Length: 224
Image 1 (cartoon, rainbow, N blue to C red):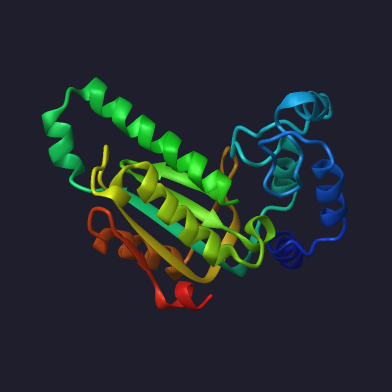
Image 2 (image 1 turned 120 degrees about the vertical axis):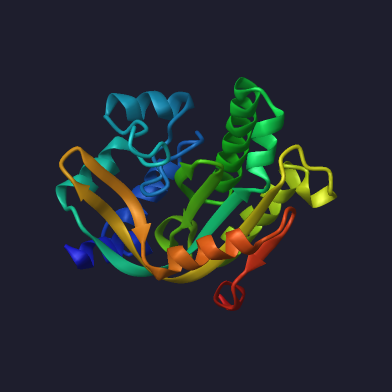
């Protein structure tokens, strides 16, 4: 099971590349990050008929891939890159705004982050409070997953206005690369596709140290 997961996460699993090429011939986006099944347009109609539509567990993985994950719970340790984007001064922002307005601001940030991460072939792992966490996995983002994560971090600064010094929401971002356990974690109904390990913790710490408008990139991510 661990070897199957490793092959899936690195994009080496048998038949995956053929499936990606097959679905890639249908010009419809967005797509499943793993098998490339289209989610919209004419291709989206076909995939929904075949039960390949977006999964509720992770909107960037199709139901078929998620079912495959659940059939073989577990995971593997592979090198990935992680991005943590955290709102700066969120407590002060919340104190100055009505709860509804603050909620709309965070929703805009979540939507912007999700779009940027998707464009760089990352997967949103979770939104936690005022932070966005993304995984850049070789099987999804390719061998250049570190460059993809750094590119996403830079674009996120630009789209939030932090890159120009005029943010509509101030954020700090951390990017780190290293060996990480990635897989299906949990039991019963409480199962999640996520990443665990010190690499995740290090990326979180980098984000916490980044000032508003800053991206802190670890030496490992820079080298990769």
